[in-house]
Structures are given as structure tokens and as C-alpha cells.
Amino acid sequence: ILFGFATQWADLQADVSAIVDATGKPPAIYQSFWALEAGYTNAEWTDILDSYGVLGMTPYIELTTDDMNAFLTGARDSELDQIVSVIDAWTAAAAGRYVLMAPFPEANLVEHPWGGDGNDYQVGYRRVHDAFAAAGVGGDRVRFVFAMNGFSSSGLSYDQFYPGDEVVDIVGFAKLNRGGANFRDYEETFVRHIEEMQESVTRVKPLLITQTGSVDDEYVDQEAWIEEMFSRLPTESQVIGA
Image (cartoon, rainbow, N blue to C red; front, side, top):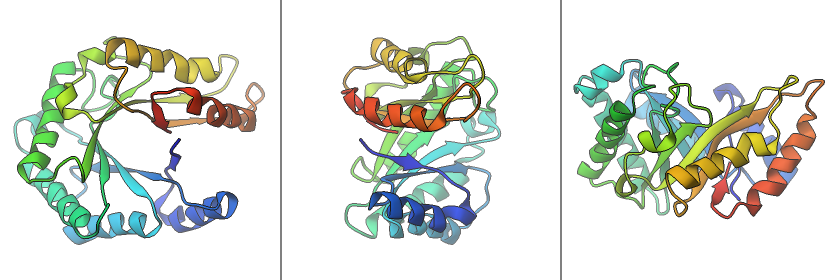
């Protein structure tokens, strides 16, 4: 099972080194959040990707926007085209390079600027997918992730957001254990949402836990919680990583 993580940019090198010291290898995946409105130059985006690659990690990119309507009407096309161009060049520069791309993650949360509307999400997701396809960046270089939140504050199920098998390579969800008396154990954090994804979307496509973690408080033994996660997730035949 693949292990990934995210950290503060300033701590990236030190944190990866600590993981290598403890396990003998770097994480397989590094999670990064790219906003269409970030305003980075191509060189800056490339430097970010190079940093992950040098450390031996595959980038997992969650693409966001602060204005979904602007994106859907084409007002962010130049920003999207820039990101496509950067990823195209970076993945073409060395054999075996690829990125995982999750457009507008956790769209079933109304709290996100892009969240709460299944149809808008599907249209937006396909716009991102089609931009890569039009640039000739295929599935050997970018793999698309349908990334939901475990809980849906929109009241809509996963299948009401699903854009279709032909544009999704990996499915997944994010779920955190926030502790307290109502803490979420393994079954509540993972099993219920794995089963929901299987029942409403697919039992075939690989499933990635796109974000997870646990607090450590009087109700939760964080170390035991993490150990159970790593011992039990590999028994889930559809799950490829977390």
C-alpha cells in the first residue's frame, strides 16, 4: 500500500529525511494544493515539481479555485493552460514521471467555493481533464482522481458528483478523526466510506485515501489509531494507498 504525506513547504526536506531515516525510503506520494489563482510562474511551478521528484515522490495535486463560476465560464482558462503546460513539460522531461491530479477536491462539501453542486463539479472536472487531453498529456503522465470528502455536507451522494469512468482513473475520499468523545475509529473513518464508494460509484477502480489523520487526546490513542490504519487498509482489496 502506498504511503503519502503533506507538510509545510519550509519543512519538506527535513520531514522527508526523517521518514527516510525511520523507514528506509521516502513516501510514495506528496500531496500539494494548487490554486488556479496562485499566480506562480512556470519556473516556480516547475521548481515545486522538481523538489518532489528529487526527493523520490510522485506529486498528488489537488486543484482548487476561489471562483467556480469564473472557471466554468472560461475566465481561468489561461491559468489552467499554464498548469497543463508545466505538467506536460515536467512529465516529458524524464521517463516514468507522472502526477496524480484531483480537480476540485471534496466538492461534496458546501464549505468550499467549488462545492455543493454535482453538475458544476462534473463540468469543471471534465474541463480540466479535457485541457490535458487536448495538450496530448495522456494517462501515462497524468492520472485523474475523483476525490470526495467522506462526509457530504451537501446531502448528495458520491455518484451525484461522479463525472464518469472514462475520465476517472482513481477514486477516493478524505476523512479525519477529530477526537473527542465521538472519535472516529477505523470502521467510522474508512470502512463506511469505502463501502459507500463501492456501492454508489465503483468496485473496480483503485481507491486512494486522499487525506486522513488523527488527533491525540484523552479519547484517542493516536499511535494505536495510526497503527491500526496501516495494518488494516492493506486488507481492503480496492485500496492502493493513503
